[in-house]
Amino acid sequence: MKVALLQMTSHGTDQAANQAKGDAFCRQARSLGADIALFPEMWSNGYTLPDPRQPHELEPWEAQAIDIDSAFIGHFRRLARELDMAIAITYLEKWPGAPRDSVSLIDRHGEIVLTYAKVHTCDFDREAALTPGDGFPVATLNTEEGDVRVGFMICYDREFPESARILMLNGAEVILTPNACTLDTGRLGQFRARAFENMVGVAMTNYAAPQNNGHSVAFDAASFPEVDGDPRDTLIVEAGEGEGVYIATFDMDAICAYRQRETWGNAYRKPRCYGKLTDSDVQPPFVRPDARR
Image 1 (cartoon, rainbow, N blue to C red):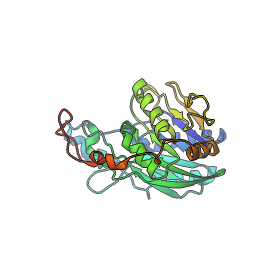
Image 2: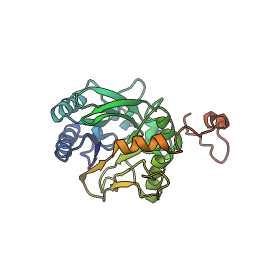
Image 3: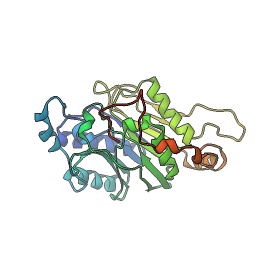
Protein backbone atom coordinates (compact mmCIF):
# COMPACT_ATOMS: atom_id res chain seq x y z
CA MET A 1 0.00 0.00 0.00
CA LYS A 2 1.39 3.36 -1.06
CA VAL A 3 0.59 6.48 0.97
CA ALA A 4 1.37 9.82 -0.68
CA LEU A 5 2.48 12.51 1.76
CA LEU A 6 1.30 15.79 0.18
CA GLN A 7 3.83 18.25 1.63
CA MET A 8 2.68 21.70 0.56
CA THR A 9 2.31 25.32 1.57
CA SER A 10 -1.26 26.59 1.57
CA HIS A 11 -2.99 29.65 0.18
CA GLY A 12 -4.24 30.55 3.67
CA THR A 13 -7.97 31.14 3.84
CA ASP A 14 -8.42 31.02 0.05
CA GLN A 15 -10.35 27.76 -0.03
CA ALA A 16 -10.70 27.71 -3.82
CA ALA A 17 -6.94 28.04 -4.29
CA ASN A 18 -6.30 25.32 -1.69
CA GLN A 19 -8.76 23.06 -3.49
CA ALA A 20 -7.04 23.60 -6.83
CA LYS A 21 -3.57 22.99 -5.39
CA GLY A 22 -4.75 19.90 -3.51
CA ASP A 23 -6.30 18.57 -6.72
CA ALA A 24 -3.00 18.98 -8.60
CA PHE A 25 -0.99 17.26 -5.85
CA CYS A 26 -3.50 14.38 -5.72
CA ARG A 27 -3.12 13.86 -9.46
CA GLN A 28 0.65 13.80 -9.07
CA ALA A 29 0.29 11.30 -6.23
CA ARG A 30 -1.80 8.97 -8.38
CA SER A 31 0.71 9.21 -11.21
CA LEU A 32 3.28 7.88 -8.71
CA GLY A 33 1.06 4.90 -7.91
CA ALA A 34 -0.41 6.11 -4.61
CA ASP A 35 -3.33 4.28 -3.00
CA ILE A 36 -3.98 7.06 -0.48
CA ALA A 37 -3.22 10.80 -0.59
CA LEU A 38 -2.72 12.38 2.85
CA PHE A 39 -3.12 16.14 3.36
CA PRO A 40 -1.52 18.28 6.09
CA GLU A 41 -3.74 19.47 8.93
CA MET A 42 -6.81 21.64 8.26
CA TRP A 43 -6.05 22.11 4.57
CA SER A 44 -9.35 23.84 3.70
CA ASN A 45 -8.21 27.10 5.33
CA GLY A 46 -4.47 26.50 5.57
CA TYR A 47 -4.56 25.85 9.32
CA THR A 48 -5.77 29.39 10.04
CA LEU A 49 -6.95 29.99 13.61
CA PRO A 50 -8.26 33.08 15.42
CA ASP A 51 -6.13 35.07 17.82
CA PRO A 52 -7.82 34.83 21.26
CA ARG A 53 -6.65 38.39 21.97
CA GLN A 54 -8.65 39.58 18.95
CA PRO A 55 -12.34 38.65 19.54
CA HIS A 56 -13.36 40.22 16.21
CA GLU A 57 -11.49 37.41 14.41
CA LEU A 58 -13.76 34.67 15.77
CA GLU A 59 -16.89 35.20 13.65
CA PRO A 60 -15.16 35.37 10.22
CA TRP A 61 -13.05 32.36 11.20
CA GLU A 62 -16.12 30.32 12.13
CA ALA A 63 -17.62 31.27 8.76
CA GLN A 64 -14.76 29.35 7.10
CA ALA A 65 -16.03 26.06 8.57
CA ILE A 66 -17.53 23.52 6.15
CA ASP A 67 -19.32 20.18 6.48
CA ILE A 68 -19.13 16.89 4.61
CA ASP A 69 -21.86 18.06 2.23
CA SER A 70 -19.84 21.11 1.14
CA ALA A 71 -18.61 21.69 -2.40
CA PHE A 72 -15.01 21.38 -1.13
CA ILE A 73 -15.53 17.85 0.20
CA GLY A 74 -17.67 16.97 -2.80
CA HIS A 75 -14.83 17.93 -5.13
CA PHE A 76 -12.42 15.50 -3.47
CA ARG A 77 -15.05 12.75 -3.41
CA ARG A 78 -15.40 13.06 -7.19
CA LEU A 79 -11.62 13.23 -7.56
CA ALA A 80 -11.17 10.03 -5.54
CA ARG A 81 -13.59 8.22 -7.88
CA GLU A 82 -11.89 9.64 -10.95
CA LEU A 83 -8.39 8.68 -9.80
CA ASP A 84 -9.43 5.38 -8.18
CA MET A 85 -7.44 6.55 -5.13
CA ALA A 86 -8.38 7.15 -1.50
CA ILE A 87 -8.00 10.72 -0.23
CA ALA A 88 -7.63 11.80 3.41
CA ILE A 89 -8.85 15.40 3.19
CA THR A 90 -8.51 17.75 6.15
CA TYR A 91 -10.66 20.76 6.94
CA LEU A 92 -12.19 23.08 9.51
CA GLU A 93 -15.46 21.26 10.16
CA LYS A 94 -18.69 23.08 10.92
CA TRP A 95 -19.95 21.86 14.28
CA PRO A 96 -22.52 22.95 16.90
CA GLY A 97 -20.94 25.46 19.26
CA ALA A 98 -17.52 25.72 17.64
CA PRO A 99 -15.78 24.15 14.63
CA ARG A 100 -13.70 20.96 14.76
CA ASP A 101 -10.28 20.14 13.29
CA SER A 102 -11.23 17.14 11.15
CA VAL A 103 -10.16 14.67 8.50
CA SER A 104 -12.43 12.59 6.30
CA LEU A 105 -11.17 9.43 4.65
CA ILE A 106 -12.68 9.10 1.19
CA ASP A 107 -12.24 5.68 -0.38
CA ARG A 108 -11.39 5.07 -4.03
CA HIS A 109 -15.10 4.75 -4.80
CA GLY A 110 -15.77 8.28 -3.53
CA GLU A 111 -17.45 7.22 -0.29
CA ILE A 112 -16.58 8.71 3.11
CA VAL A 113 -15.68 5.74 5.29
CA LEU A 114 -14.46 7.63 8.37
CA THR A 115 -14.45 11.17 9.79
CA TYR A 116 -12.16 11.90 12.72
CA ALA A 117 -11.92 15.13 14.75
CA LYS A 118 -8.75 16.02 16.65
CA VAL A 119 -9.11 14.93 20.27
CA HIS A 120 -6.02 16.59 21.77
CA THR A 121 -6.63 20.17 20.73
CA CYS A 122 -3.89 22.58 21.83
CA ASP A 123 -6.03 24.28 24.46
CA PHE A 124 -3.07 26.36 25.64
CA ASP A 125 -3.06 28.20 22.30
CA ARG A 126 -5.39 29.24 19.47
CA GLU A 127 -6.90 25.76 19.18
CA ALA A 128 -8.88 26.53 22.34
CA ALA A 129 -11.44 27.90 19.86
CA LEU A 130 -12.08 24.37 18.55
CA THR A 131 -14.46 21.65 19.73
CA PRO A 132 -12.34 18.56 20.56
CA GLY A 133 -13.23 15.19 19.10
CA ASP A 134 -14.53 12.41 21.34
CA GLY A 135 -12.90 9.19 20.16
CA PHE A 136 -10.49 7.34 17.89
CA PRO A 137 -12.50 5.43 15.27
CA VAL A 138 -10.97 2.93 12.85
CA ALA A 139 -12.36 2.02 9.43
CA THR A 140 -11.71 -0.63 6.81
CA LEU A 141 -10.35 0.93 3.64
CA ASN A 142 -10.64 -0.97 0.38
CA THR A 143 -7.55 -0.68 -1.83
CA GLU A 144 -6.55 -2.39 -5.07
CA GLU A 145 -4.39 -4.78 -3.03
CA GLY A 146 -7.05 -5.56 -0.41
CA ASP A 147 -8.58 -4.15 2.76
CA VAL A 148 -6.58 -2.21 5.35
CA ARG A 149 -7.69 -1.05 8.80
CA VAL A 150 -6.94 2.68 9.07
CA GLY A 151 -7.17 5.25 11.87
CA PHE A 152 -6.01 8.83 12.44
CA MET A 153 -4.14 11.07 14.81
CA ILE A 154 -3.89 14.80 14.08
CA CYS A 155 -0.71 16.66 15.07
CA TYR A 156 -0.75 17.05 18.90
CA ASP A 157 -2.61 13.72 19.23
CA ARG A 158 0.61 11.85 18.37
CA GLU A 159 2.36 13.34 21.41
CA PHE A 160 0.15 11.23 23.69
CA PRO A 161 0.91 7.49 23.61
CA GLU A 162 -2.71 6.76 24.47
CA SER A 163 -3.85 7.98 21.03
CA ALA A 164 -1.93 5.37 19.06
CA ARG A 165 -2.58 2.71 21.69
CA ILE A 166 -6.35 3.03 21.52
CA LEU A 167 -6.17 3.03 17.72
CA MET A 168 -4.19 -0.23 17.89
CA LEU A 169 -6.73 -1.69 20.31
CA ASN A 170 -9.50 -0.61 17.91
CA GLY A 171 -7.80 -2.63 15.18
CA ALA A 172 -5.72 -0.10 13.22
CA GLU A 173 -2.95 -1.52 11.04
CA VAL A 174 -1.88 1.88 9.68
CA ILE A 175 -2.25 5.28 11.38
CA LEU A 176 -2.36 8.40 9.19
CA THR A 177 -1.40 11.75 10.73
CA PRO A 178 -2.06 15.20 9.27
CA ASN A 179 0.30 17.73 10.91
CA ALA A 180 0.88 21.49 11.22
CA CYS A 181 3.85 22.15 13.48
CA THR A 182 7.64 21.97 13.56
CA LEU A 183 8.86 18.39 13.36
CA ASP A 184 12.03 18.28 15.41
CA THR A 185 14.11 15.31 16.54
CA GLY A 186 11.98 14.71 19.61
CA ARG A 187 8.67 14.67 17.76
CA LEU A 188 10.05 12.46 15.01
CA GLY A 189 11.35 10.10 17.70
CA GLN A 190 7.91 10.03 19.36
CA PHE A 191 6.33 9.12 16.04
CA ARG A 192 8.80 6.32 15.41
CA ALA A 193 8.01 4.97 18.88
CA ARG A 194 4.26 4.92 18.16
CA ALA A 195 4.91 2.52 15.28
CA PHE A 196 7.27 0.33 17.31
CA GLU A 197 5.19 0.01 20.49
CA ASN A 198 1.90 -0.69 18.67
CA MET A 199 3.15 -2.68 15.67
CA VAL A 200 1.39 -0.32 13.24
CA GLY A 201 2.56 1.56 10.19
CA VAL A 202 2.50 5.34 10.66
CA ALA A 203 2.57 8.13 8.06
CA MET A 204 2.54 11.89 8.69
CA THR A 205 2.17 14.86 6.32
CA ASN A 206 3.36 18.31 7.41
CA TYR A 207 3.27 21.73 5.76
CA ALA A 208 6.33 22.63 3.72
CA ALA A 209 8.64 25.53 4.58
CA PRO A 210 8.21 28.36 5.23
CA GLN A 211 4.72 27.59 6.56
CA ASN A 212 6.30 24.84 8.67
CA ASN A 213 9.48 22.82 8.31
CA GLY A 214 8.29 19.85 6.25
CA HIS A 215 9.95 16.54 7.24
CA SER A 216 6.83 14.55 6.46
CA VAL A 217 7.69 11.03 7.49
CA ALA A 218 6.60 7.39 7.61
CA PHE A 219 7.76 4.44 9.70
CA ASP A 220 7.17 0.73 9.25
CA ALA A 221 5.78 -1.48 12.00
CA ALA A 222 8.23 -4.36 11.59
CA SER A 223 11.36 -3.62 13.61
CA PHE A 224 12.42 -7.28 13.44
CA PRO A 225 11.67 -8.60 9.94
CA GLU A 226 12.70 -12.14 10.88
CA VAL A 227 12.12 -14.24 13.98
CA ASP A 228 15.15 -13.77 16.28
CA GLY A 229 16.66 -11.56 13.57
CA ASP A 230 18.53 -8.29 13.94
CA PRO A 231 16.56 -5.05 14.33
CA ARG A 232 16.36 -2.72 11.38
CA ASP A 233 15.73 0.96 10.77
CA THR A 234 11.97 1.32 10.29
CA LEU A 235 12.18 4.67 8.49
CA ILE A 236 10.40 4.39 5.13
CA VAL A 237 10.70 7.99 3.94
CA GLU A 238 11.50 11.41 5.39
CA ALA A 239 11.05 14.55 3.31
CA GLY A 240 13.16 17.66 3.41
CA GLU A 241 11.62 21.10 3.92
CA GLY A 242 10.37 21.83 0.40
CA GLU A 243 7.12 21.04 -1.35
CA GLY A 244 6.62 17.66 -2.95
CA VAL A 245 4.77 14.36 -3.04
CA TYR A 246 6.59 11.70 -1.02
CA ILE A 247 5.55 8.06 -1.34
CA ALA A 248 5.58 5.74 1.69
CA THR A 249 5.19 2.09 0.70
CA PHE A 250 3.89 -0.30 3.36
CA ASP A 251 4.22 -4.07 2.92
CA MET A 252 0.90 -5.01 4.49
CA ASP A 253 1.56 -8.77 4.27
CA ALA A 254 4.79 -8.28 6.23
CA ILE A 255 3.05 -6.06 8.79
CA CYS A 256 0.26 -8.61 9.28
CA ALA A 257 2.77 -11.45 9.70
CA TYR A 258 4.78 -9.38 12.17
CA ARG A 259 1.66 -8.60 14.24
CA GLN A 260 0.82 -12.31 14.31
CA ARG A 261 4.10 -13.38 15.87
CA GLU A 262 5.68 -10.53 17.87
CA THR A 263 5.23 -9.54 21.51
CA TRP A 264 4.09 -5.90 21.41
CA GLY A 265 0.47 -4.96 20.93
CA ASN A 266 -2.19 -6.31 23.25
CA ALA A 267 -1.32 -9.88 24.31
CA TYR A 268 1.02 -9.14 27.22
CA ARG A 269 -0.46 -5.89 28.51
CA LYS A 270 -1.71 -5.68 32.13
CA PRO A 271 -4.81 -3.45 31.93
CA ARG A 272 -5.70 -4.17 35.55
CA CYS A 273 -2.75 -1.94 36.53
CA TYR A 274 -3.67 0.99 34.30
CA GLY A 275 -6.66 2.50 36.09
CA LYS A 276 -4.89 5.81 36.63
CA LEU A 277 -4.81 6.32 32.87
CA THR A 278 -8.53 7.11 32.84
CA ASP A 279 -8.49 9.22 36.00
CA SER A 280 -9.42 12.80 35.09
CA ASP A 281 -7.74 14.36 38.14
CA VAL A 282 -4.59 16.39 37.42
CA GLN A 283 -1.91 16.73 40.06
CA PRO A 284 0.89 19.31 40.35
CA PRO A 285 3.09 20.16 38.53
CA PHE A 286 0.77 19.45 35.59
CA VAL A 287 -2.26 21.56 36.62
CA ARG A 288 -3.19 23.99 33.83
CA PRO A 289 -6.20 26.33 34.23
CA ASP A 290 -6.93 26.34 30.48
CA ALA A 291 -7.05 22.55 30.08
CA ARG A 292 -10.33 20.95 28.99
CA ARG A 293 -10.95 17.41 30.25
